[in-house]
Length: 235
Image (cartoon, rainbow, N blue to C red):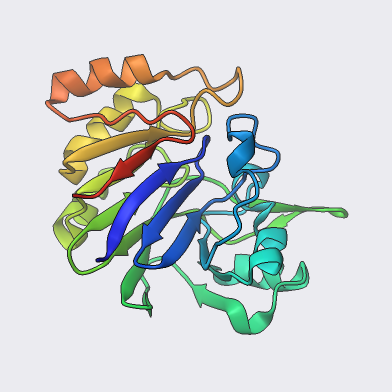
């Protein structure tokens, strides 16, 4: 069956239904004002993949992993932080950019992203490794979650190496790409479906879905706008 659907939970959080498993990418849910209340505490999560350590991406991962028993994939530094936050070390998969691991038939690869990364501890922020993008491939469908990033030319290499059909791209501007840059990123990636993320959560994130649709039309890219809670089904 493979990857069956992608559910957008607001900001950068998504749930992927893969066979009988549920995979969460950057599951910032409880404190995410864009996440529907009914989806803030999912009962099943089998794997968590983190793009970087910022609080609006990774801060809730330790408690979610402990509550559901989920495994965690992240950079070496961020994995060590997860363990320091009480996650069972046997459930942590250390990775870094350029590496690929197998998980229950999936291939998971960490790609480059251009962004900072730290994790907030009570004592203050600590270094959490470099920010990453994520490739998830089930042998038929390839999904790319760009994480927080600017537009960069090596997205062409991601296209050449991994051939993603679906891309989740930040469009909020100020801290990441804006709508125009994200539309250009979709062309470099050659994806069939471009889903905007990381926008509308806070007033500082000024990029809009409408601007993204307009920018995509200039590049002949097919945007797929998902409201928080909506699902993109894989045919």
